[in-house]
Image (cartoon, one colour):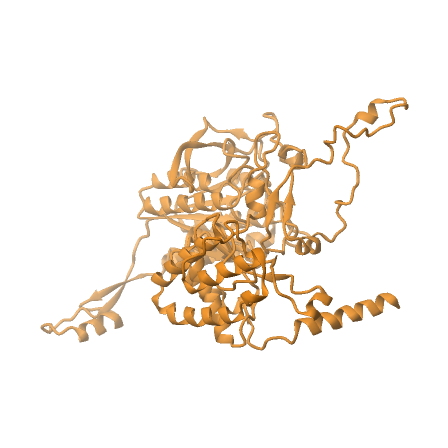
Length: 608
């Protein structure tokens, strides 16, 4: 009964302290596309992603009800980082929905001009001036937002000491006046009431953990508390001293000591997992990140260890060296990645099931019909049909008229000049299941077989490769079929023998496929990439580094005259593939079972 009364009281007092919902509130999802366009138009980096911000402690002047309820201590504030822009999930600062929407757009314009700085006030003033110069049309809206924000600021007469100095400096910065000399130099957003027109620059967990080294000299990879939680949280790197207390005796001196008493064991403590990590993280102002004393190698699954030479695939020839793009230095690092080509050892003959052979025949007939379809030559003086575009141009032309205008189109039989490389991602993530009976690697295997059958019937030259990696020194390319090989039982056996590998160093694999395809003399050269996730590896290739290197590899492929195209089954592909391949350079397969059909459809569309 007491617990029930307490819950009801908490609900009542919290609702009374927070007041009614603002009908003018605007959700982030409603303006996300406009925010992205504004940020990119202002010069924001394409690799920066948009994410909902988490709550941040603020120095609010709270009412009596808010003090009783213990509310209004945190707020959703816009946060800027070099790799992510975190904005409030909803903005209800003003009663007018148009002003709340204008605030979202202003924060996007401000983020495009924000630079990393330890002086929060100065950096926001400089970013404001730069944003107004870049977007002069926002001046009127900004002045209206600034007046509304100044009207909401606490009165200086009610503040004392450091709080009064901090608030005075913020109001001067908002008005564009000179900053007072007595302002706190270490002023931060948490020291004042929320400044909705500015962005904070907190150190994030991803930045803090980059400075924590493992015992093997490699860097830790930050794991999300939840795969579905994308909020950004402030963090600081600390040193775990729980097992480093030299003046505390952890055993009784009079007892007989055995070897087991000196064994270092991580015993249970108050920080053990109780299933409420997200709730605890949301209630903390700053997350403390400390190394656990283990090397990264000890946290990797055993089946990720490289097999012995006797049980591994057969290497083909010496290894190859390829460069890698370092986006921080904006330069290619020569001979940075070692690529080794492997072929399956003793690949056993395989017979695809009847249903798969039926699908292969259907796709083969589809591509054969596409190849037999005659092409169209436009702008002819005579032909089978009217060329509508040529007719409109001819009518709009004010020059002399011809008795035989080139406004027709004619069907002609053309021969294609096309070469294709299919590059399949064989990373460990392909070991996941798409349903109760089928894994991703099996779907990829079926797609490779159907694709090979269809291209073999069309007569177009093609090659097939698989890839995975374990750091930059072990990029593995699985040889499935070369251009000069016939499509036979040996190729089908190698495809049937593929299995999940390691990680996804996509840039090196694309560069290797580009080097092979660039040697072909066909007019059209297509590079199809089949993957189930974003680029990643054990070292610095995780995150933006891998994305930027892959993007550079795709750019190099286009400069070599190739047409790269990605087919993926990753549900989050829209977050990063437009940055890598462009908005029209990829296809997302929502159901992995449809991969075979979508792959053939993408090929047909690219070669039409």
